[in-house]
Image 1 (cartoon, one colour):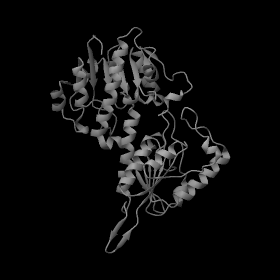
Image 2 (cartoon, one colour):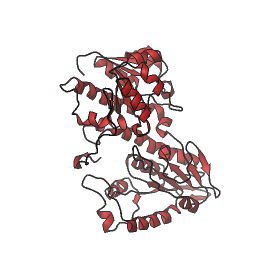
Image 3 (spheres, helix red, strand yellow):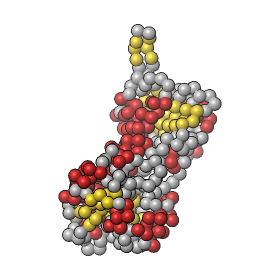
Image 4 (cartoon, one colour):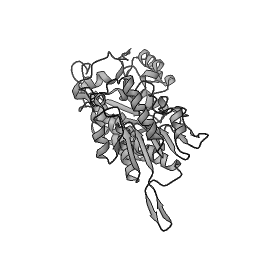
Length: 388
């Protein structure tokens, strides 16, 4: 990781309700084995079930918040650092985390004014080289799992088919909208719980993935749909005629479902609307909608962030936020591994001539570099090899 001494710091997250931590004792031990000094704010991992003693056993130094900030060459975070703490970091340090740069312009300016660099983990390229660093995927995987668990807890009936002396209970019908990382995990989890699962996605290639998990794919599969994916694996815009046919099919399908999980997220942009109020009203009393995109505005019309609401006709709309934080130990462990891989790469590139300025991973993730805001980066055409 280079011969220059390095110090990595982690804080207890200041964001309300955030239970994750950006460094696990496991990752701390690996940093230290590579010659890195690790500073951990006392209590940083408590909400994720990581005790201070575990960090100390790994070789980390337990310090107060001020010392962790002042000593950091690299500060690891889950949520963006509070802007009023930026001035406590030394010039030349780097901040790495899920920084949500599109909605935190003032923070980027504060980081730049302090002469810092900052890297947003949600901007990493979808390449093979960066796969081990892919924090969006690691957290989405857990969010997809937890979405089904939370929806099942709200649902007033059983998920699997059950045959008893008193008769048979039919399995729940679950519809997953979006077959990305979170959606595929939601499908797999609902199937494990015994539900009859269907799913939809705008990408034709998703059909095979959905079917491989034992679910049925729902889409208007005409000639336009067959050509709806670019060579790079990205969805093409669909005609108004196709969108109308697809909307009609989805509306008809939603009416028959016990549970709908929506998973469509676009980093840095509002979530697309997938379910209208009319479609919610068409569902049967007791059915459940869970919106994984609620923190970005929601896929479901009328969803309320942080709340479970019941419509006038008895449909429950679940707007719980930060589902990975409801599995804080596992979410933190996976996220810390993503950060470990990224920071090791950052150190290695920084030790080379040019300081990694031309490295594709660092260029994609950088939002502030050496005191200059570099977000948003110039748009580039997606390469065919980057589809994930």
